[in-house]
Image: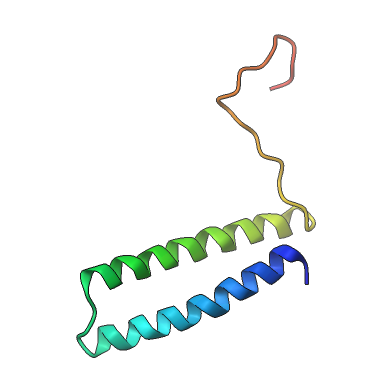
Length: 79
């Protein structure tokens, strides 16, 4: 496994447990606003991680080149 894939696998396994706990709390009526917000954060983090990994796969296992659109370029530079 690559480092990125290994890290993603660990994050997914850990967050699976967190999501299961949240589902039990929600179904039992024990969920709090804080717990729901934390669970939403977990889902957002997982979505980011999965998108990053998908981009890596799309670029042949290498992270895509980042482009900073706010960085000024010199005249004549491609862009």
